[in-house]
Image 1 (cartoon, rainbow, N blue to C red):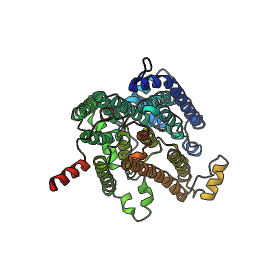
Image 2 (image 1 turned 90 degrees about the vertical axis):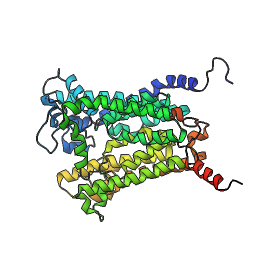
Image 3 (image 1 turned 135 degrees about the horizontal axis):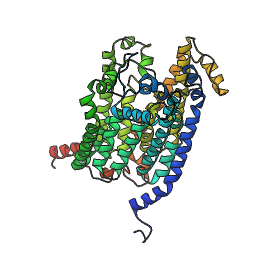
Image 4 (image 1 turned 135 degrees about the vertical axis):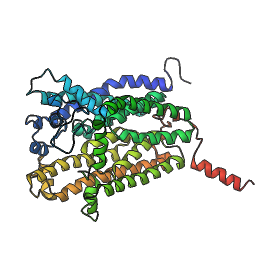
Length: 471
């Protein structure tokens, strides 16, 4: 029994979190500032594409301000533009709303200054969202809050990819959803998750782990409130655009369906190794990617219900997101931000985390240097020349060859897969789970934390065995 004044359990953890929050926020702010500085060689050249590939400091933010007509006062979804196969902003509505908000904020700047102001204001807001994601991740990490917060804040991936696109909006909202769930506020968690889905598609995947674990623990009321909150928030944001700008609203979904093999996807490698037909047949490509994901998701569902101990929520969230990304036809460099908080919560061990981050860094430079060779229409450097240039902290002249880029792509693919395998191993052998060996059950689990199992395949098999052998 704790003595008076020392606090117990959750109260003590909240007090510790409050004391550590300024430290983690400060570290995240410094890393975000370094990320902004990393983009400056390209910002000084108005993000000229060849320079962005050479210095690995590309961003979508600056060019899309012009390409999507924001500089001309066009409103996402309500106004169309010409010049490509895309006629409306191709992001879910909350991301488009974020873009429009910043476009309004930079109107006081001169016409020639607005593009760079749009980028800088966006970067500032994304940095705030990164800090929110760090603090929310730390909040749900229980006794390892400092470790979890610093692992996210000090991630090389955060420094390098924070400002490529608007992904941190969804990352922060998803982290807040997990924090609300951890605090046993399922309706609020659902609302945050609904907003996250309105910013990017991928948080929709988290409904599966939440439902499966609630079923296993018999937490029907919490599950219902979470689902109602998710649907309500998503509809509140989307319905007005659906009603008044249907063509603009549906652009994201139709664009995603029609999109072909993109950089970073494992199909980019496989199309040169016996699956060339996928490059020209989008329907087959979608079937291959979606079919593989569904098989993996079914395996995760069995794992959720059959594991010897109910998996922790971040473990299942991480696994289902990896299952979605590995066979996806698109895997942009900044998608690492989607995985980052969940990887830290699912397995807060440094060796595998550092190896994964190394794989992401290798891919980050690999994609830009490969695009440089594609843009310059030159063969690109071989592996030996690439390693020599990297050792001298420079880019290979003319970029890298496709073979070297394939190695970089596989480095990321394999390290993410390896991390997922380790998480599965922890689920199957909970005695090796570093979180649970410390005496906790599921700090992020909310109503699931410490709950008894009601439904599981092991209990079902046990009941069948007793029924078959009453003696």
